[in-house]
Length: 208
Image (cartoon, rainbow, N blue to C red; front, side):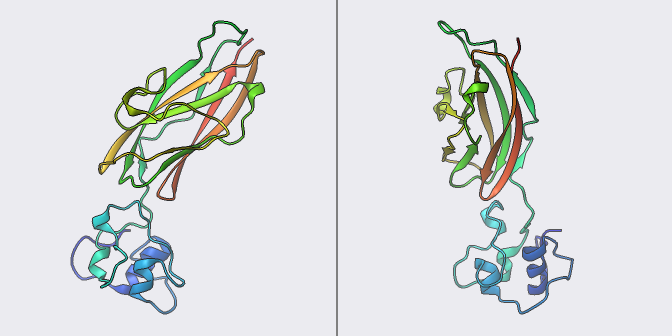
């Protein structure tokens, strides 16, 4: 349970929320420092920066318990997430070849700094998976529409730092360029924002 949005609040209960994600748990043991829990110093757990700025401490003096109103340590900025999926493309025989692209979306709340996407370790013998990201709309089959990042291939981390609103639809265009033989491999794509992650499993499929 998050910190209440108004009324009396307790410093020990705030410590319960920051340390254990439950304001009502009454499980925190030890000395409590408002400064430490406002800044993540000492033994305090770092503040979940994915909370809206109005719902978390600003880290600056003077510190106040009121800065914790509505703070939710378990808040996850990712919603309407991308389900695991399969992307298929025909065998790449060379010459004129058109990769397969597919559009997916998710919602990101209170974005700040870089949104990253990582598909680790390139495996070209199974074809190459790439992605392009935008909060303005579909990157399109070319990957650069709507101020998108352009395609970034597996094995390289995509980093995207747009100007966010409190809630954004993130448009992700995946591209799969198959290899010269039939193959099937499942990869993971990890999206990260403010230290929180969402993982999608993607199966690259090139039928015989």
